[in-house]
Amino acid sequence: MTSPTPADLPATAGETTAERPWPVRLLAKRLGDYIDRAPALWVEGQVVQLVRRPGQPTCYLTLRDPDVDMSFQVTVHVRVLDGLAVPLTDGARVVVRARPRLWPKRGSLSLAADDLRPVGVGELLARIEHLRRVLTAEGLFDADRKRRPPFLPGLVGLVCGRASAAERDVVENARRRWPAVRFEVRPVAVQGPRAVQDVVAALRELDANPAVEVIVVARGGGSLEDLLPFSNETLLRAVAGCRTPVVSAIGHEVDTPLLDLVADLRASTPTDAARRIVPDVAEELARLAQARHRAEAAVLRLLDRERHGLDALRARPALSLPHRWLETHRTTLRELGSRSRAAVRNRVDRAGVEVAGLRDRVTALSPAATMARGYAVVQRGDGAVVRDPEEVTAGERLLVRLAGGRLDVEALPPCPPGGGPEPAGT
Image (cartoon, rainbow, N blue to C red):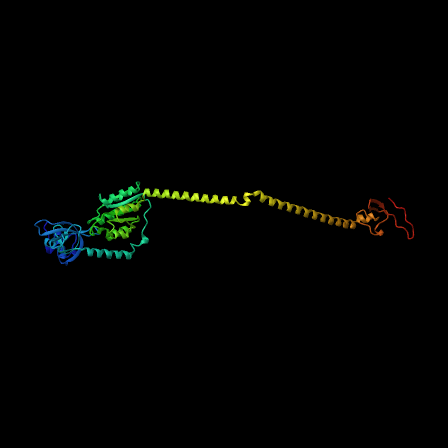
């Protein structure tokens, strides 16, 4: 199969098809032509893997973005590096003026630098200050969003350098204060190009563990450049997004990376972090003893006050001579009893007089009293009282009631006018 001639190839990338593709060399050439037309630009990054071979006019270095895992290979002439006031080292922040360049054989993109300038401390501080203002405006440093670490965490997450003094300071001092404390340690790079990435990954891993109740980010002291990862925006936002309280223990007392502002608690040193995350068992026992002593003293004071109160109550006459109080009431009861009996007798006597008067009146009005004077009540057989002789017929049986009893009689015919009485029948 013969290779197609340039005249047979599509003129543009949009004209390529599966039947008429571009060869790799043509793609590399077209990309190289396009990239070569790009103007030179200034790029900022962190230097890693600086390679300078004796006798070679060109140096090679990797320019890495400190916030993400991305880098470019950079070639620079040795005279550029020789013109720097301070020798360039790994981890330095620089800005380079470079043109992008494509290496066709490898298909890789690199930068060819013709100028390189280290980022000075003043500029680094200015950038940190600008980031501080931005995050302050967003509220990441507000006190109301900070969470209080638990008084006695069961498991402490620790992000620190590998086999570092900061790890020993935190772990040993914490266990000296509270021997039962447990740690989940994540050793990471705390300086250099991988520091931000490693610390963020460790933070997220510990934050995802529900058993971890507080996370300590610890590092020993260092220069401003060494502590730059702990003022990195990516790291700060990762700390602000943690659900677990985070304690910042970076450097010495004078070191103030922005992590101190976004963390829930700032410790001046790793040793101070150990003091802040767990209580001192000796101090707690002493406080417990003091509290017990104060409680006992309070109870004794209460008992003493109540005892004095009881003594005062017993000293009162009502309790010291209770029979005198009872005698007074007994005399009162006797007087009330005598008065009550006299009142009842008077009332009974008056009632007896009233009853006698009523009895006399009733007796005077009674039909029996009238009959006792010789009167009688005549009744017919049905009980009706006879008031007129014409109401009675001859031979009718009548009942005569007297004071001493009653009589059954029989009515006789009426007497003729002027005639004498006829003998009464029984």
